[in-house]
Image (cartoon, rainbow, N blue to C red; front, side, top):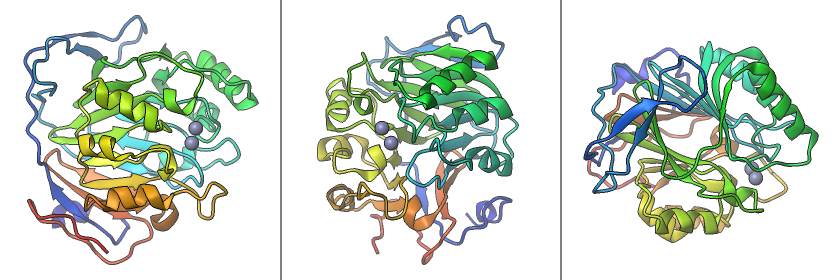
Length: 328
Ligand SMILES: [Zn+2]
Ligand SMILES: [Zn+2]
């Protein structure tokens, strides 16, 4: 643990460690290249139809660490997964701010394998144009819903001009990018509720899984549960900025997170995070971190253990394998 804590980009004082609780098992799969994106990336689609127990087996042993940054972008979302052989960005902050490209540069990003826009709201795709202009992006995923905003129009133009591959993923698809494994959990089809049609994914590195549901709300979460999607993940990003409309108990029971992280701005007009959502997560004994309180939050994992670092630290928190979460 100490060795991990002395890394290069971990100026933050607070950390937490955990031990993977799950062993992932899969019964055979068929790997093929990502559909006609025309690119040479190592993005491969994995067919999981033959899965019998609903759990994938990760046979690749990651060679190094994955660093996941839940950037402090105010009232918006931007999460970077910087792995040893893959770079994924999920959402890119608000339209009226400009911090995402500098954050990515500080994190050492040189190119992006996959850029996901969970849904077309301007607090999620806001800085897509700058990101697409500043980095080579191999593939872009959007949910397929559109919005009549200038931000959305600029995003569509920027994707077209970038030459990136484009895809609208649907629940049940699965991909490998380098040593990461990406399962698409949502949606199966689009609805007029932009939040509830958010692209939702479970990304696994070794034995550690991260869950991202954009602004999906209770209906979307229930659909994922009822569909029997593999939702178990040690690190949950709370849906919709910690809104009471998300992180419902049935969903949390399926995820069984060790740590929950939400992203929202200080004193935002929506009142995020809502106490009801925090109470539901705290009620499970889960440690919660938020970008409003902690600034940018970084999770580092070697594929077996993980640690959480925060930009604005409070006291140091440690978790030993098998112990319940500590609460403040
Ligand atoms: Zn949002
Ligand atoms: Zn939204």
